[in-house]
Image (tube, rainbow, N blue to C red; front, side):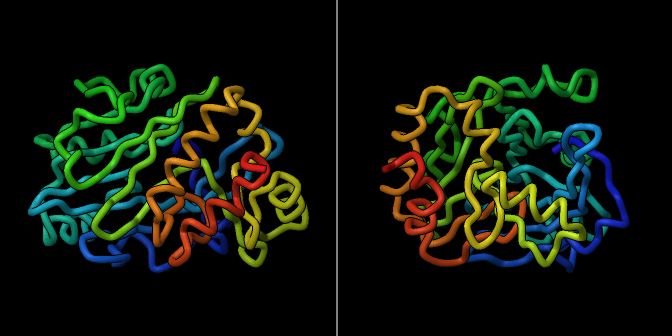
Length: 252
């Protein structure tokens, strides 16, 4: 995700940062730094989170966060990064650092990342715009969900029943927001824990509600046990129930 790191927003983070945290067999998350993102006068603190999935000895790095020396050593200790994934147009900022550290890994970009990133991504990448045809197909399902502003590509690790989202659901915890305005904005925007969902402004950018509903029904059909989110508290149980709750405005 693009944005500016602000030390004053450390309350919003999920420490310890920049270290692997096991989620399930062969699945880890890394909580990264907090950035400020949004319109100039309403920039909000966004905690960042990446997901790592291991297939054999190879790793898929989803929405990479800041790469520290310690994290690099931890990553090398569990496998070899083979795929680095930018899952939507605003989650790309640290991809060049990971590409430089692991030049043999293939970089996959969701639609419009190059448009958003400009000269920041000036190396060869592969498109991430189909639901199959990837080397990870046997272990991970891929589902692009197209909107007018961006396409988000979601992933489902079958063995652990882990669904990996980016911005389709945001779930900011009020206790981790340091102002009344931020707490009000996340609640009004439909992205506040315990009722986090697709933010209201993002719903507008997905005009094909039938297509979005079909995608949500596909995800529910996968019967996920857990859902990893990029921003806010993620769901460690009852993933299908959380999808039904978060998208009840669409499914009813």
